Length: 474
Image (cartoon, rainbow, N blue to C red; front, side, top):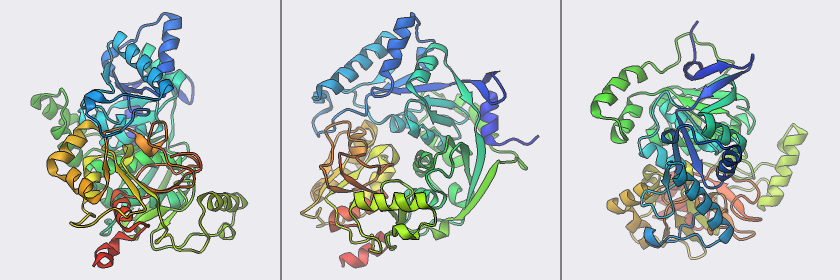
């Protein structure tokens, strides 16, 4: 019987079937961070268990680390509770022989940026992590998803996971993205169409002309954020774009081993005639630069659109959510989203902190442009490697001359677990993945958008349509 890519990955990693819905799934790689993983070590210690396969683990300190622009060797966590958390995590990783990108490691960064660029992610793998945005690795044809702390303990002890098999959803994207739009706009568009629950319970596979045209980094953005529609996993079949990225980031693969692996990786695709539980289709030609107006990623509109009213929702629950979001975000129904003044700009995160994202942001900043006087703008690279590359290319100079803060790597203002926090009432143009109430700071207001959109907003002092950026700056 023809099988989907998801079914092939699950079957190839099934250790045992537990019941009609659950299997014991083997994990090729388990990634940990100092926020969701430390408690699992305590459980192991209480039970007298070792880490079964230390070489199949990778750890990063990224959530609580400050990003102040000091030399890497001088980076310290000043919030005591966070410092204790990171210190205990570091001790456990070292005791168990687990690879760790610590606070002062030059290659430290966000786990979902560091792992691919380190050559740890390859097609056909199962990758687990105590972070929901582990779906990022679907960009390489790898099955990645987030797990809870109790599950982390089980994976450390056994390298397996009791797993409920998901239903399958194919989303086909035809045509090509218009000028001025990116995969960030595409994913915001899709989430706005299917809702924050539209992929709940499904393993999503993206197909179509628009997907094949995306770079490997753009695919990571797409897979990263599709979890905001409730997806349990996200996949894109590997192709030459994937293989070129892996050739550039081979990790410990020798050229000979890589070429041998390519033979198998080229077979990693859904079979002709494979049946999905649900199928959807969209045209990339319909995508515009998108911006969130509310407090959920599905509350998003094209930048040339107007903010909806609660009365527009035919569903009472939707109307109530719209009303609450408008009240929190401080915007009026019927007003254009373009022109909305902002106080802060954040460019970074596991969604948009890669070199391609920084290049896009820098391309919006022309000679002589300056960050608006009422705006504080930060650029936080996703890793030490990204930061180094941006400095070699001169991107950091572009940002610094224009008045952006050029920071050290980390999760930073994505989730307000560190020094980088919005004040109450501040409105931020952000390249992150979530705009929940208080996500970037208590009573803060977040508008999700692409790196180019965020950079332009920093210069203009308000949300702008970058399709008219040149003419508006003339």
